[in-house]
Structure formats: structure tokens, C-alpha cells
Length: 345
Length: 293
Image (tube, rainbow over all chains, first blue to last red; front, side):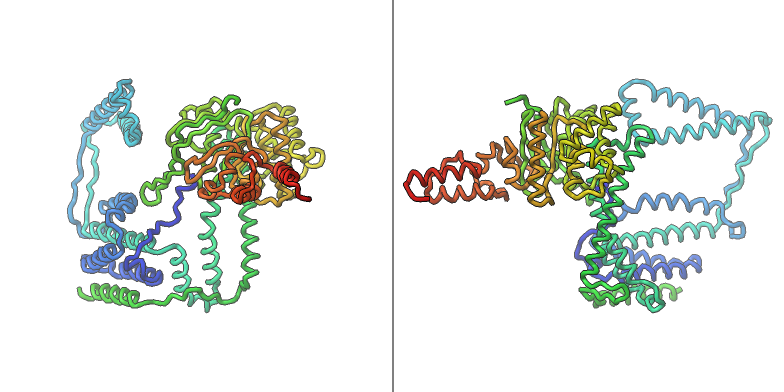
């Protein structure tokens, strides 16, 4: 059960992106965020976005990850982002220049009632059909998407019934306006740019985590944060804490699994039984796990002490990593290209 | 031979990992074995040979990908298998069992298993006290103490008592003496001998150490890389030192010595197995050749 928790989505490889330092990639990502913030201020200039898209395609090509794979990871979140941003196209601020107006649609109450009646009867027939014990219906029923859609339709029917109940006394001829929906240029631009920025930044951060091991990522972040050390912030301690946590997560997951197995073998059941029984079963996991973790922490502290670790000493790295030619090249290219696109128009 | 209590036919278990697409890792391939009731069997193999995976099928923690396994009449692969009942019949002790203790007193921890079986309170009490006595922790001293005050070996015995209190028909021990010193080990095995004699349990010992299963087991199964490569009585297995070496195992030092002596030409029958037998045989042969001791 715990095996499915995958720690990051790092794919080993030897592409250019894999060989870059973590610092470079982080700096590029941060710079792109700043770049988009600046670019957003000027509407209807497409150059920055086209340039960013080209950079993204180049980066994907250089990383050795297939675009299809990247798309598979991104599509669910993108769908939600898209659904979330679409309403702002239709309900923007009223000051913008209108692109198109979907005029108010006037429907009489009689028509509405008639629609509700037809919909409800169709839904009733649909549900009755589902309940028939014919075998094609059975496989149809197993489909979980169908069950979710049925629930949605049912809710819609309930809302419709509520509406019907509220408006049953209204005179049948009077109209119910479905109000004018104005779509402005501004709104369209906001939707497009937001969606685009979201896609690009998300894709770049995915590329970052796919091509960088978590340890390298933490080290890169620490190196970037070194100026903060002069402000007496505990940057080294933060790095060590995060690295130790990352290193021990798989070990602790193994231990937790082992505990679950041991207690299950004694008859603990974590999914059945009364609430009290289930809580009792969970307690049989909790205490030994915490105990094991604390014991490990104490042993690790002793081991670090024995190796001469000092709390306010400066730790040096075993492998000093310096920025190579490819790092500088990438940084220079990105900087030139993005600033150029901002200045062109 | 008595009725087999565990029957395994063509068992395979393949781990599905979905890290980067389905990676099939075969932990067990086509295992066939039978364990007779009341016997003590040892399952040996090097780390990674699949022993832990195999024994986790006995109480339903893992389900076979293919093949059948019937434990005490319960088919583990069946969809409606009563796993709770199965786990009452099969008591399993994992590696380093002292890390699973959690209750406030030794009594409460040992009573955890029987409580899950929904027994009456006096029945639980009888079982717990008997189990504690059987593992050499007299209940008058130890029942009310917190488990974390005990030594490692004692905590391990508390865990064993916790499993024994459920009165299982089959007792599975996964490397029970790992991490114990020599004295702890002999003590543990003395308790295991006692349990074997007093109760009619079938004992399954999983180990990578040949010597420790030599004294207890009636029958051995050798696993390597997910396959069952050898099975037989300890005597027959130990006399095949070369085959064992191929599977990454070593016969106990005495067997190795006897094999070497045989190679040098000394006539030692294959029946000689324990230290006492070897000693008396060598003593005899000296007398026969007329040399002075």
C-alpha cells in the first residue's frame, strides 16, 4: 500500500538537461516567472509567449523525455485550470471593450416547465433501464464514469425540481431572462495568457523535477540561498534537515509496511470493525512507529557527532560542483532570448 | 507421514511496480511443496531468494499471482477466503519482532491477538499467562511490566508469546534469532523445542543460517532466486555441500569437515550428522586401527 508513494518523478538519463547544474535550472525557472510577470503587463503582444513556447519545445527536445509522457502528466491539472479560467472570459470587469455579446435569451416560464418535465421523465426512464437485470446493462453499470455522470444528472434533476417548485406560480407567458453575457477583448486576453503561462511554467517545473535528483535539487537551492547566510539564517541546517528527511523517507516507509504486516498477522484489521476497534488498530501502529523513528534519530545524531559534525561549522561538499560551460551557455541563451522578445515590440 | 497441512501447487508471485510503466519482478516462480501437519520444516535461501515472500502467502498477507495454495483447508487465493480465520490458524513472527510491541504492559501486548479473536476475558487471561510461561517469562514477574523495560531478547520472547497466545495450528518464524548473541540463540531454540514437544503445532522456520535449522527441522526446502532448488532431510541436504555452495549457502562447519575428510579417503558413512555421532565414529575408528588415543 505504501509502495505507490513515489518520491519525486526523477528519471535517470544523460541528456543535456540532466547534466546541467540544479542551480542553473532553478535560476531559469525563476527568471521565467519574472519574465512572464513583466510580459503580462502589455496586452496583445505575442512575442514573449511564442519565445517561451520555443524555449519549452527546445528544452523538451534536449531532455530526452518524450512530449507524450510530459503531456500525460500534465493533462489532468491543465483540464482543471482551463475549467477554472473559462468563467472569467464571460464575466469580466465591465470597463473593457466588448468583443461579442450573447444577447439576453428570453424564455417563457411555460417553456422552462416543459423542459424540466421532459428532462425528469427521460432521467427516470434512464434509471429504470439501468436497473434492468439484462447482461449488457450490467457491464454498462460497472463503468464508474457512468456512475459519476448518473450522480451528476441526478443532482441536476434535483436542482431543476427545486426551480420548478419555486416558480410554479408564475404566469406561463412571462419571460425569464437568461442575462446578457458579454465577452470582452480583455477577458479573452486574460484567459489566453493565463492558460499559456500556466502551461509553460508547469511544464518547465516538471522538466526540472524529472531531470534533477531530489538531493541535487536541495543542494542547488542551498547554494542559491547562501547570501542569506550573511543574514544569519540557518541555511546549512535547512539543507541538512531536508536531505536527511529525503534519505530516510524510503526507510520509514519500509518500516511502516513491516509494522502493518506484523499487526495484521496478529489479527488487527484496519478497515473493518467499529470506530473504536479501528482506532485501536491504528494505535498499534502509531506508537512503535514513532518509537522507531525517534530511536533512529538518536542513533543518527550520535553517528554525526562521532564524525565530527559541528552545529555552526561550515560544511563543505565532498564533490565541489562548479558551473560548467553548458550552464553558462544555457543561462546566456535564455536571458538574451527572453529580454530580446520583451524589447522587440 | 501425516496429512499435509499446507499444499502449494505451481505458486508464482510477481511484484507489480508502477514506477515507470509496469515492471514485472518475479519473486516466486512455480513453487510446489507440501508441509505435513506437526512437522518442523525449514525454508532456507540467501537474501533475495523469495523466502519471506513465500511465507507471507501462508497467512494471506500476499496473494499468489498464479497457482494454488491451501492452508489448513482454506484456499488463500479464493475471493471470499476468510483471512481473519486464516490468521488465527497461522501465527507469524517477523524479523526483529521487538519493534512491534506497543502496549503499556506485557500482559496487554500479549493479549492483543486473543482480543482480536473476541474471546472471553478469563479465556484471554488463561492464554496469556500460559503463553508467557511457555516462553520462559514467568507471568508473576513480567506480566505487569512495560515491554520497553525489558532486554532485546526478552522483548522478542514477548512477541513470540503474543503469537502463541492465539493458539495457532501453524507457527511461522521469519529469521527468529537474527541479532541475538549465541546464548540468546540457544535459549530461543530451547523454548522452540519445548513448544514443539508440548503443543501439536507445525513449525515453519525461515532462515539463511543452515546450522540453526539443523537441530530442529525434519525437512528442508532450499530456495534460490524464486525457485525451489532442493528439498530433503537435513542430512541429505547437508551432504551435498557443492550444490549448496552453488546456491550461495554453506553447510554447517561439521558437515564441511566431514565432506573434506571423505574426500581425503576416510571412510565415513553419510549417516553421520551430529557432533556426537562424528565424535563416537572417529573414536571407534581409532580403536579399530589400534592407535593409541
